[in-house]
Length: 265
Image (spheres, helix red, strand yellow):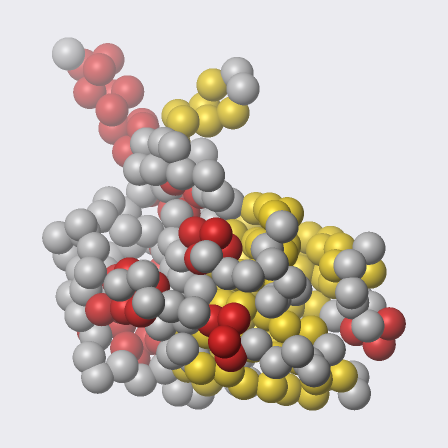
């Protein structure tokens, strides 16, 4: 039994370590109708903080936010599950103050809708100083171009009532959709948005690697676990997220903060 106990302890120690072993990644993103003035525009994409529950994921969030602040991107976008418990609100406010002007949407954990027994609803929700988009749109000027951001409220998505393309401004030079759930891309009209940003899946969080890839135990058949996906509806980036849920471990699914660098196709 002793070797098995040692092996089990080693596995748990690795999962605990990996939960805080954040990857800071820069990705080139090619868009077909990117205005010349926005060539090289940088977007920091953060997701799934899950603050308020004990986890080394909190240190990953801290490092990811600090890195985004250091990079001084043109835009910071956060795609949901900021809190798993209301006790994380003070930490969240402190972190968001480091990336002023950011835009965010909420996720299912923010409303306590999860299988995670530790999740509690954070209500009323205060995401200041970030601009919270709940089935709303906002337009910012970047390098003299109009960049529109549309955010999906998780409740309307879960009720299959979300229709973000109704908010899309055809006159905007660049249109970005923020939604916690990646499958929103299957419900929008092609061409409504140039870029879709999502999270939710943590790249599986608990995975088993094998020769052709890895088995994601939490979402074994989900089509968009993490990374870039080019679909008829538009290009989508799904963040692996920074925090943890249900268990405070990650196995072969490192937390990540991502900088997307836009380039013309």
